[in-house]
Length: 227
Length: 227
Image (cartoon, rainbow over the protein chains, first blue to last red):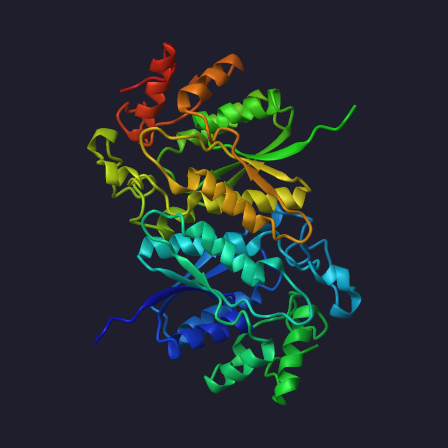
């Protein structure tokens, strides 16, 4: 039997990365190692979701990396990590703000993907996967195709192993991704999306709105409890 | 009086970054914040040198970031971080190996510069400086002009603040850099270069050889003690 090709997956515990976890294993036939990052996010409940999903698919290797210094290093820069800054409702944000909203975390994806590429390189693995998707309502520059292309142009300079970062959902809308995940049997009760660090999801932050719209579009109830 | 322009400097405690610390402050007239990284390097004596130099120039902000997880995450991949791997003498390495020697640390500079760019962004600073120089004897892809150009192409996508990474010594040889540093009054007794984690510098690893050649070329004694 041919040995399965391997990939390193960024597994946050959100809908995107969890759907990708199942898709990459079941449809792409990849053998996965996952990395989850604690970067001081308020919504650290997502770390539990990541652990649950990694166990559910019996990942052979799942590492949680402590970057919790990051929240204080970049203090004041993101509502996702700074306790003094409030996560806004999506409805509070104007069009210009939505191009780089207060929930943007400075250079986060480049940092996480750089570490994932190093991990892949050390394992002798050529691919890193992450769950960037086509955002309808708001945007982050580090979830775009140009970002991906340019990041790969950097990594291509490696003289031994040029790791490639791939985002299979980058052209997909959240609802398309959810449809795929439901077909694959993903249990979305064990994913976490809300940007606020509460026990229940708020239902009004940008991430909750996006999630709820996807469930509404498919006419499927969201298994998560909302305030 | 015009407010000084600011920059974030990667300060390892080695000759390159220490020379750059003095050059950027005294010649470029920049106000600097520095970041030093503990990534599990064997030569962690360089961290003490970084602290000494930061104090010597009275840096207003010097943060040491703990990435010590990195050595275990990339276990087996670099002689600079893995206790089970021996740092080779330069004389043991053939030409092909020298293009990416065992002392290469997977994707290290991209990780450190990504974090530095996030730090700069959060401070409202537009520049990151690092001490890459033109290596005579061996090479790392993440110390080259194409690496720098491509990294900046990624960062240019930021929709609010496109931080630029600069390496003022990238075209300089070690001896040129040393000449400049001596003119600027740099105390090289408080820099650390040797890749091995011993009390005295070994004098035979690739980094020691490169350092010693620079001192020899200038006809100046190296103030460090060697085995």
